[in-house]
Image (cartoon, rainbow, N blue to C red; front, side):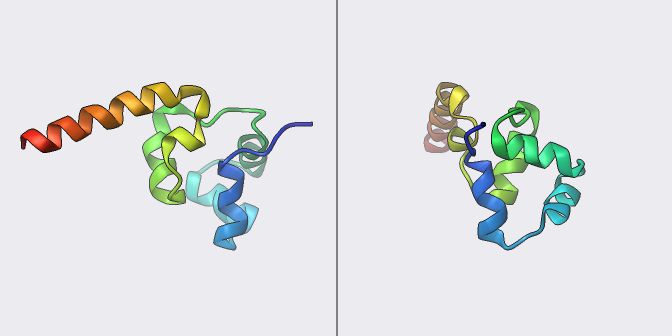
Length: 83
């Protein structure tokens, strides 16, 4: 049995149906279920979209890549301070 992911918190908290979430991300219902159970990881190239739609930070959506997201956040923070 797969463990539910941070992404799995989004649907119940938003009150959205499986079909509605699938439509937002332009994927089928099975893909949403695989993302929710962790059977398939959320695609890295769509992480910004997942963050915007769900409000869940990337490091929680993909804890396996948290070090990448932490480095990216630090880089953005440094850029903002120099601007």
